[in-house]
Image (cartoon, rainbow, N blue to C red; front, side, top):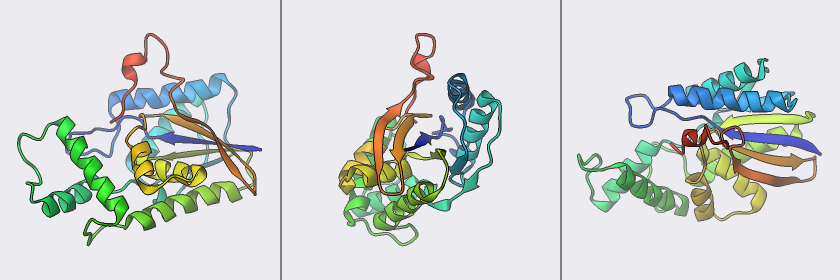
Amino acid sequence: MAELFIVRHAQAAFGTDDYDRLTPLGHQQARWLGEYFGERGVAFDHVITGTLRRHRETLAGIAAGLGRAPDASERPGLDEYDAEKLLAAWTAREGLPAHPPDRDRRTHFQWLREALGAWSDGTLPLDAHRSFATFVDDARLALAAAQASTAERVLIVSSGGPIAAMLGAVLGLAPRAIINVNLQLRNAGLSELRFNARAMHCVSFNNVPHLDRADRRESITYT
């Protein structure tokens, strides 16, 4: 069976004026992942990414560590949901201030979990955002494109939401379970699948073998 490696982007600049870029640590995480692939003789004959800057920068880091730059195609269906729009819709529904000055990191992610849950249930009023069903369908189409290729080893670089949706399709997960998977994904985390034209199977999930060593464990991040 062919191999599919799905990688979440490396650490992006959460809490800054431009989340869609990697931090210095994120660039290093991506390069280390590329070195991990290179040490094991892993080469990709088909690469797919989303269209976001953090996806491209992660692939560039992997390529630098690997020592080669594989050709890649981009699919908008691998782009992340707009967390700020979803949070704004949820806080408006709940009668909460959208940006309270005392909202810390923990509260932010508690609210985000609630907003994502409402979105996945179809109970969140939305005007300028894809429905959860459409979002999942877009991610699954990208997965189907990988499966339809004749490649023996495929790499997908995306974000937590689309990756959770793809894994949800393979594992038959309910919408709320997809959200739970999404919120557990690590930066530059690696999930491995095996596939042929008839089936796809999950072999491993959310691994960071390139960071799982004593001098790098503090480099394991989630946001």
